[in-house]
Structures are given as structure tokens and as C-alpha cells.
Length: 141
Image 1 (cartoon, rainbow, N blue to C red):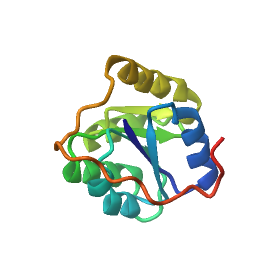
Image 2 (cartoon, rainbow, N blue to C red):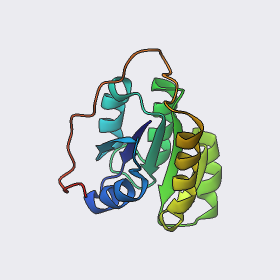
Image 3 (cartoon, rainbow, N blue to C red):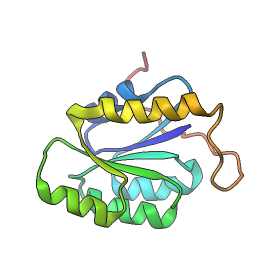
């Protein structure tokens, strides 16, 4: 399974990667919506987490664009806030969920269930995905 994490704060990406980087999950990290859009066709993620407050394209704009570029990806918008308008904007952008960063166990549960239910997630286009070449500035533990 492939997971793309889109967040402009390296510590937040590290936190999400550490929490959701389960065995069997390949993680690709992007620091902006624009970078995610450049890499989504090559990486072909099954799941994408997108921070609401990104420079340039915000999280909702990034989600809309990702849904156009790679429709099979399930996009979850992640925020540190619980503003009611975020729910409406998330649905309108095509996200499957909006979760607070404090509620990452919900996302971990979704990934764990998918990993347990399938030995390998189906390839959206039948091609082998390219590996994410950008490395996190943090060592993986």
C-alpha cells in the first residue's frame, strides 16, 4: 500500500509517518500541494493525507486537484483545528474524511484493516508504482 503525506511542516510529516508508517506501507512525503501534484502520477498513492493550511494551494485546493490527477486515491484532510466549515469544504473537495491530528488512530485503523484484508492493494492502473525518491530529513526508526 502507498501513502502520500502532504504537509508543509517537517515535524508534522514525521509524526504522521511514524504513526501511519505500518509494515507494508510505502510512504512518500511532500511539503506542498504543488509538490504532491508533481509526484502523484508517478507514486500513485492509495491514500493521501493533506494538511488544511498549506502555502500556495491550500488543503482543499490540493485535494480537488489530486482527485482529478489520480481519482483512485482516497484523500483524508488532516487538521489541528475542528472548525465546522472544514467539514463542508472537505466534502466539497472530494475528501473521504476530515480528521484532527489528535485522531490519527482512526486513520491507522483504516490502513490496518485494508492491509489485513488484502495481501497487496490492487493497482489502480495495473502498473507497478515508482518508488518515492524523496527522503525524509528524519531517520526512520
